[in-house]
Amino acid sequence: MQATVGDRLVIHGKAVGNAERHGEVLEVRGADGSPPYLVRFDDGHEALLYPGSDCELEHAPH
Image 1 (cartoon, rainbow, N blue to C red):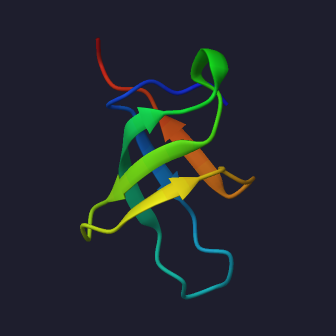
Image 2 (cartoon, one colour; image 1 turned 180 degrees about the horizontal axis):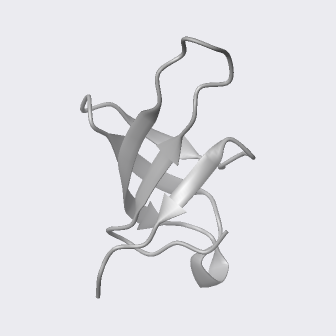
Image 3 (cartoon, rainbow, N blue to C red; image 1 turned 60 degrees about the vertical axis):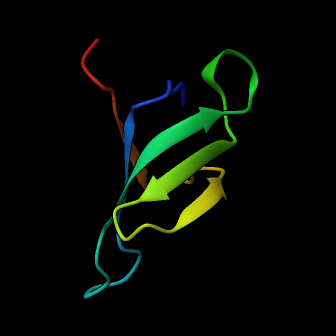
């Protein structure tokens, strides 16, 4: 996964009934767009994230 600042991440619920989480990439700390990413989720929570298979990247329009 290759991200840039401003891209959006969607983390799909792992079980039926679990809500998706949406967030914006604030920092890319890996080389050449690689994880980890500092992400601010829509609820205001910030976390350092290594995306898993349940994560989808939506590139920001440039």
